[in-house]
Amino acid sequence: LYALLTLIAVIFVLKAILLFVFNYFTIRISNDCENNYRRHFYKATLEADWPYLLAHKIGQLENMLMMHVEAAPKLMNLLSNIFLNFTNFFVYLLLAFRLSWPTTALAFIMGGALLVFSYPLARRTKVLSAKQAAIYQAMAHEVNENVMGLKTIKAMNIEKESARAALNIFDTVKENKLKLFFVRKVNSLSIEPLGIIFVAIIFSVLFRTSNFDLGVFAVLLYLVQKIFAFV
Image (tube, rainbow, N blue to C red):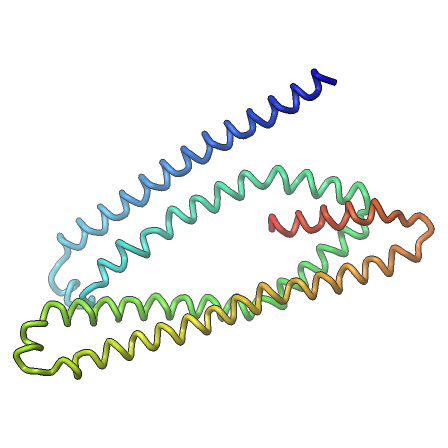
């Protein structure tokens, strides 16, 4: 018994160490990638032709260096998490099919129907996110222009007129954020009632069988929930 407890403790310690090392190297690689992208975009902008620069607004480079460049390291982190979770996903999938392959197959069918249902909301989220990025670029351009021409604005006494455009952009940011929050919440909160309906259907089907086991049913639901959590 003591040997088994020691082995379990050692396994968990080794798992923690391996996860720490893996995450450390992931962060190092993603930070290097982010830094290289920033250096590349900044140097390329300074060396770009003047007609190319005229086609872009003030503040676009700053917005790109501060926000857009972070998307590449986030993608790398997402890929690393997918790699880490694949083993757990495969184990849960095998156990679920071993307990009841019809229930697991039905769960995947329901999951596919859920993906089809959530696709319009996901597409709407993508559209609103792209709109938000464009608004942020316009906001950075407007603010930088006003700051650079602040002396002229003060001399001409047009502070209110100059501020009006930026204030309208701020209001647009607020409205778009509310829309984005609403769509994301509807997409995430709709999963729970659909999951309850799925559980009720599975329970009603399995309960009629002669070999129904409540313990197996609970374990199976847990495994299916973990599978969809990884997906």
